[in-house]
Length: 414
Image (cartoon, rainbow, N blue to C red; front, side, top):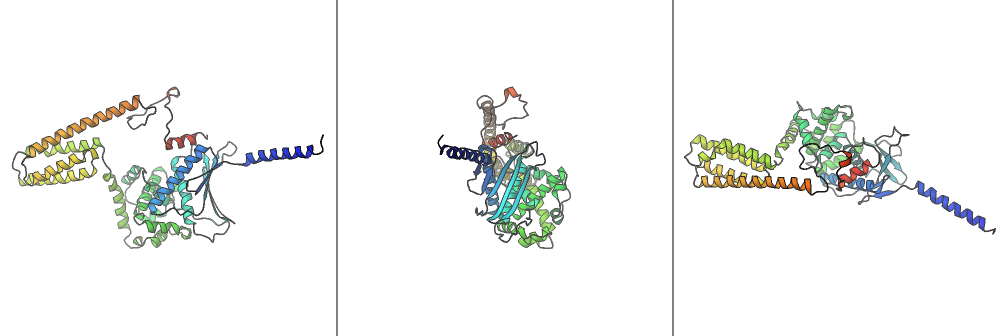
């Protein structure tokens, strides 16, 4: 055996062992498009979904604050599998520390069925806000306890994001009476509330953040100064929002709650809802009779009121019916002024057009239902009227939209 063979063999074995150790210790990672989020763990699909979600939440927040993306500290999202030997592993935990190279922010997520989308979005938003709060804080000592964003701020910003579902918020406020004073609400601890109390807390949070977001610069300044907040949440708010510093605080607060409740009435109606309200108006207004005779003062007053109601209906009407509602409103206004020349013919044309449009919409609905039932490889669920029970032998093919891909990736980890 050559004297140089054994050292060569030893070096080869050492390189193999070193490569194996490196492979076992290397964790795959993904970096989000902006570079702010570095995701470890999971597979490529899951990391990609998490990157998309984090970037979307950040974009929504920057839109509310009217800010450009000026992040300074990269944030780590660490995806962990909850194993049987670590049952105590929390669903989420944020690690905040000061290192010699700078601030370190890390969000640990335990992949579990208990980690619902709402909790996931809330924790990512919390991580983003922490980076904003401590972006310019250069005097943090090692081991210092960080200031968490208030729970109401997290809930309110989530509800204020585009495409957020606000109907539960309005429903929670509708069943609440009386309105809780703002200082009392700010002192509440949501983790101690029951389910109805927690829903009401989220509703008040949305109302407050919507109110504050009317001045996005001041709201951004409040977030920037949270690192120096005190134990008096109202006083901290008043420093950034002078409008909250007045003695008459409860009056504008009640007005804001009323505004949120009124927002329910500003949502656009569906075609069927608009049609129902319009038919109910025509049944009570008796326009056919009023087109053919001279009107009394009381009848003209009733027509003016009907014209006002139709104007409000037009503001909420489905776009397909809005023009027809507006023409009915104009006709009622003309009759109230005594202008009934050709009114009967106009009314007949409007009713004919309304009937034709309703028939066409019914045909469209029927076609869409047929197309989904017979032509689509997957079912969208937009036209279902009840829950379907599908056994394992007849499961639908998986959908490929981004949200479904994210849910499938999460489920594959368990």
